[in-house]
Image 1 (cartoon, rainbow, N blue to C red):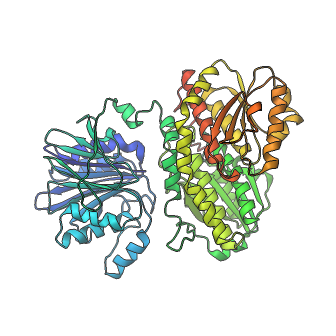
Image 2: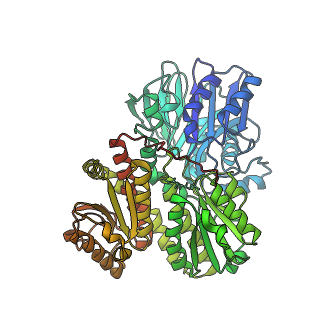
Length: 615
Ligand code: F6R
């Protein structure tokens, strides 16, 4: 997830673009850059690694020439480290076209190889630079920038918003989108492009929403929209009545709520570009050789908090699909128990921020014992992936709300991908089985949409619980970590006593907590594993018989659960191992809404920080 801005009009483009980037910085802050078409028909460009402030300082020291046409970008790195060279905008071979990009070009490796075979020198590790070269090749062949963009989009695979300028066409900015956001700001004698309306809300509140697979060309005079084949198309015009803070949150009251609703997109992005042309899984930054993977005889997952719960889910998937034994350990405890590690142990460190001190110290310890460390991380260039032997980036985009939501779901995706990749290399699953699971994973974003469409039921439920002092969560198998995660969310946001239990464990003590009217949220496993489902129902009966109010999350069509549920929240039908991807969402919504109703600051709960850099 990156922030993108484009401008053409009477104002100084540098000022408008940098201002827009400041409004979009919440979308990414690894690096920033701006490119302008300046007199003499050349591109003038500045870009810097790090926060926007670094770029602003560079521009203050040496401002770019005056210009009325420009583009800008604030980056959340996906391909390549967050440094000056990989920062956007990127230029074509002749420095005629400058281009910025949000998203992932899945077939960039093939396209890059073809360009390099034609003697193109690519300076960065990004997928974006490839597109800049391709668009420039088209304009050099004599077509206009709009046609060039249409033609290039026809060969691109993946998700992208692209915005480009051509030094030989100084009064135009052209953009395209597929599965990635882009809005047009309609001004008086000026037009804007942005990843969202926050980019231009200070200048205009009139906006045009683009459809899928569309190209838009803006000039001072107007806006032209086509599809990728040049056929005229239309955008949806609307008036924005949000203030700036709501605009940054896409109209939501909290970043956390926005991030919950972003999860279908985040999960889809996390799955993008993971298979090659032959359909085989490939994990880009997985710097472990097949031989090293074949040598692995034990996996230890280390993580903290929500990331630890992702690790607990991963254990079920990895053991089932690869038959390699997995231990899951709190990072803060790991090195103090003198764990048994050697070169055939793979340590998997899961961290959204990539900076958690407990996890970092644990991987340092593992590496001194000659174990290989693989990081699952959302933050490109952060310390944990830098100190690891291999990394899988989760591609969720920045998570601003302190409580992890899309970070968690995309960590789960990365864990499933890791498990399937190891299964592919070790041959513990047939290719068609791996294919089938990938298809099931690819259907998940749509299924999360279904859960989100039912948010109102969860909000109503939260309203009924504003006076509650204690809530229990029950789950079994992969639903057990979901129960723990639901309880953690409620503790950290609503400051309530909340506990998650494995349903079978209740009778060994915790059932004494149950009293008349106590809300118990139960994550009911899908019926695919009959025994699991039946055992869960027994657990629910036990608490209900003692007066608990049971709120059950159960799949569509599960009628067996109906007599035991005081409240029933329906989940889409998914395989048991993937159920955490859908079952966690109502629990996030519940905690977010209850905390809101209780008047708490949901984005910055008391006593908590987003990156915990002390042990
Ligand atoms: C809870 C939460 C924390 C983090 C934990 C680890 O909502 O966000 O429990 O999961 O502090 O952080 P990372 O994943 O950045 O290492």
